Structure formats: structure tokens, C-alpha cells
Length: 478
Image (cartoon, rainbow, N blue to C red; front, side, top):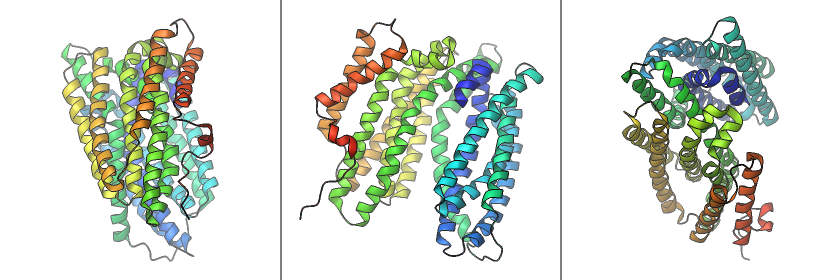
């Protein structure tokens, strides 16, 4: 809802400028938030009968880190903006340094809730944070454009974001408390090493999420300057690409539910030294993931412009529709990479996962640069960026699948893979060549999905009994 409403309030060019600022800042603050949450959660969980003392210790560490890194982000905001070819977002980036500080202080409180297994409270704060952020950004964008003048909507949005982050920080500190003095653990050096490893992994992952969007901004700005246009001419193209990303990231977000279930199952089977169950869980997990991906893939291929137009309007649909037809399948490989790396993590291969994610990042940066750099400021630039992203991810998925096969001895069964590909091709053919274009998206999309689901049932790839236990392992023989 946040992205949908902001696209309407700011227009495609303002939405593009805001997306650039958020993409750049999210690499920094998502990394520190995710690493802080995990680090504090582990520390508090290990503290036994003294979780409050452990919390006070790590809060002092995180306060220093958040303030120092926030100041660095503010100082380097102009450099980052110029490097992206977007100097007009400098003020927005400086304002987002406040978000960096507030979220850097907020994350430890949520980590404490997680470490003490207060999951409902954690979920409530997640909901509250998302709601306040959405309200702050939407109203901030509207007020910024009205009170500060044309073109100031993105700045108003990030100012609203900062105020929302400050409010949720105060509420979380009041609810959780700041712990108790007197603790000696963890030592600063030990905790810094642990937090450093978490930061490294999260930094690479967040860079991978934003690599194509940030490269696009740079190349689009260069293309605008090459024909005598201002760099702000790139905003519309960046906004259209971001609109395509909104849908293309859905596979990754949906498969998060699969990875949440799959991780403990594989880890438990591995701990019990049961390679048969490990193989079965991996095979079934990948099979389910591919079925979920195939349902979205058929829509990305068949009705990309209609999907974007439904949310962002005709201009975004015209620019972003052809892009989504390439970017959607490309980011399906990102989602699949997430499942494969989850399996490797659950088997205790975190270092290999880090290296493979780093390979994915380098591959995406390389292939996208080779394909998109130097392309004129036109829709072809968006398609080339999406294709380069996909090629890099395909390479990374291949290498990761190979590594997982070495560890487990199995991946998805060839028969299942063939059935899923066949039903996907059938659904795409129906969407592209059978259903009339005049049919509304509210009918076309469900009909395409129904055709594919029926195909999976007809090929017995999906059976009614499986709906109650898709990940159920084989029963051990007595």
C-alpha cells in the first residue's frame, strides 16, 4: 500500500527520485537493523537468567554504532548522490541518516523481544512500525509537495519516515525497557566480531537486492547527460523500473514462508543424522518453491502491463510492462536462490552461503553493466538492465544448486521440473494467445492461474492430500 499510494501522490518522476534515495539508504539501514536484531536476539537468548543485564550491555554498544554510522551516512550522502547521478536527492539522503540512527537504536529492542521469545510483541511492533512508516511517508509526501513547493514531495516523504522511526523507537524503549546495569557479558571485542560477521552477510544480501536499481539510476543519468538533458530526466525511467520491481519481488517475499518452514526441518534432520529425510525435505521444498514461482511467472509473462497499470497508471504500464516481462522471471531466480541458500544454511554452511551470495552480487553487477551501460535513455535501457540482472542470477543459482547437490545428493526431481515447466508454458499460451485482450485483468489473471493449477492436478504433480502436508517427510520403516 505504501508503494502504491506514494506512486500516485508523487507521480512517476517523484516516485523515481524517492526510490533512488530509499534504495541507497536501505542498503545501510537494513543491514544494520537485521544484523542488530539477530545479534541482540542471540545475546539475550544466551544470557540465561540475566537477559536484562545482557540487554543493557549491548544497548551501549549499539548506541555508539548507530550514532557513528549515522553521522558517516550524513557526511557521505552528497558523495553517494553524485555517484548515482542524482545530486537532487542529497537532502533526502541526509534526512534518511536520521532513520539510520533511529532504526539502529530500535532494532536492539526488537532483538530483545525475539531473544526472550515474546514473538507476539515483536510482531505487533513490526505491524506498528510498518503502519507508522506508511502514514508518515504518504502524508509527508502530500504535505511536502503542498507546503514546500513542486518537487519537494520526496523530501516530505523521507521526513515523515524519520518521524515515524523516532516515534516507534520511543514506544519500543518504553515497552521493553533499557535493561539493568551490572552485566559483564558480552565483552565488546567478542560482540564486535559476532556482529561483524552478521553485518557482512546482510550487507552483501542487501546490495544484491538493490544492485540493479542503483546501476539503472547511474546509467540513466549518464544517458540523460549525453544528450544534454538534466539528470532528473532519469527519474521517470527509475520510477517505472521500481514499479516493475514491486511485482517482481513478490516471489522472493512469498517464498519466505517456505524458507521459514524449511530451515528448521532440514536442520533437525541434519542434527539427527538422517540423510534420507534431508534429501526429501530439500526435494519437496524446492518442488513447492518452483510451483509457487511458476504461478507468478505465468502472470509476469502474460499480463505485465495490466498488472502495473492497475497500480501505477498508464505511463508506468507503458514503460514498466515490457520490463516486468523480463524482470519478473529474472527475480524468480533471486527467490530460488533464497531457498537454495536457506538449505545450505540449515546444513551449517553459512560461509559457503556468504561466498555464493557474493558471487551472485558480482555476477549481477557485471552482466547488467555489460548489457545496459551506454544504452540511450529509452525503454530499451530498462529491459537490458532486467536481462543483465537475470543472467547474473541464473549463474548464481546454477553454482548454488551444484553446491547443494554435492551436500545432499538431490535436488528437485526431473519429472516434477518437467511438469511445472509444461503447465507454466500452457498457462502463458492461454494468457497470450487464447484469452481476449479486452478481458479485464480481474478475470484474465485468475483464469491463467486456474489453467495452471488444473494442469498441475491433471499431471498429478499437485494432489489434494498434499495440501495438508506438502513438506511431510516419509515415514520411517520399523
